[in-house]
Image (cartoon, rainbow, N blue to C red; front, side):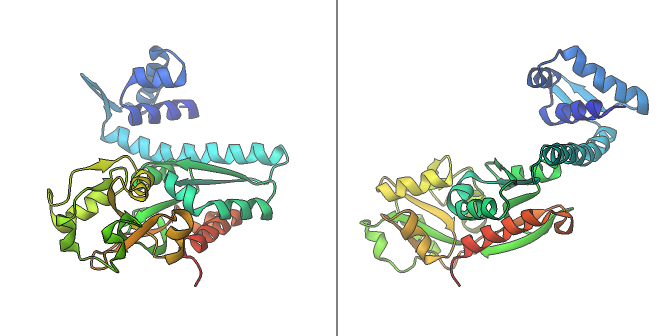
Length: 296
């Protein structure tokens, strides 16, 4: 058994296809099969269940996959850091987060990290969902992940940052912009509302209202929803930081009308072990938290 055997096996489990893995790794399908067969011979167990439309790990395969994701990921990450140190670098901070969060709440933290640690490599992986960010953590592709927290997560240590608030985003000239707040019941009667589908918005709101109550209109992401609301094309129900200065500084023509009776999600950091992180990663997490919370 080699590290390459394990790496290829994990890829097969994730992609569910020998062909897809061969294409991604620029090798033959036969070469991919050889890695898997070598593992199966070594353990004397079937690790994959062959199906008409691909493969799935067996119970034994899932056991090996989970161990390999953690173990090989740590080895590969350590190897990258060692090479960076050997080349005179100061190490690396790897972050997984949504693209909108990176754009709106990380620029100051990025600049400050570079000022404090000039040789530090910062790697940002943007993902569409918190689940994908957590997958980066599990595979050791990230040291920390900024996610929407809905409860405890196995094998992950969480650090909540801020409770987000649900708001109706509208153009400043919209009749709704003058409202100090909205009730949840009013949302069902407000026309032209969109929801960002690449976030947890729809699922969270449907848990409160039930399916079919809110409009079915949707946009690809949080940023698009805000842009369309600012332009007056539509209105958007979004979860935002409760910092009153944020919207006016970033989107001057946008107004956010709070919906206080809806429980908002919590934004926070996740890590496999905060005690095992290098100090710059912890510093970056704290800098971003400060920017999201705004002035005290």
